[in-house]
Image 1: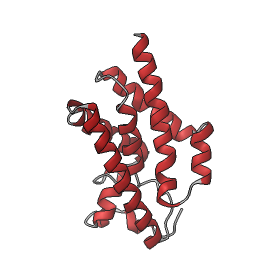
Image 2: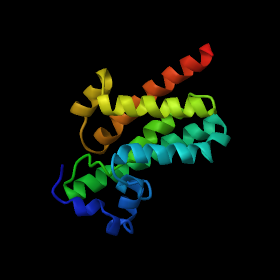
Image 3: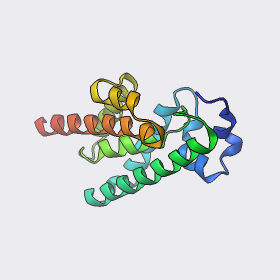
Image 4: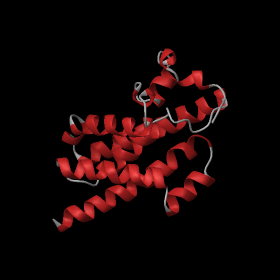
Length: 162
């Protein structure tokens, strides 16, 4: 963890990079900022993105991910920080990726959230490898995208069996 945690505090939300990386402050909530960021991302999807066609949602995920990668890389370089807990843009991108695959039902959304958080925290297999071996802005984003892909595919498979 970096030594300059003030770069990701409530009084820094006026900075566009901090606002973006904390998903408008969700990453500043305690405890478990990654879970809070994921819950806020689920709410945004449920009450907004889920009504859009899947291709449009996919475009949003791609653009959001690329912008987050770029903002994160520049922020980490400028501040000397690393994958700080308050950075939740990666959780947002990962969960939104998972939700591309699931039906718009309460159970599928909650299961995708639960599996995503489980994979993001436990970091099994490829997810852990990406976390350990990928650095910078891409490193912050990659493991969450892999966790989201795994969660989304599992929920999609379960939904297909229902």
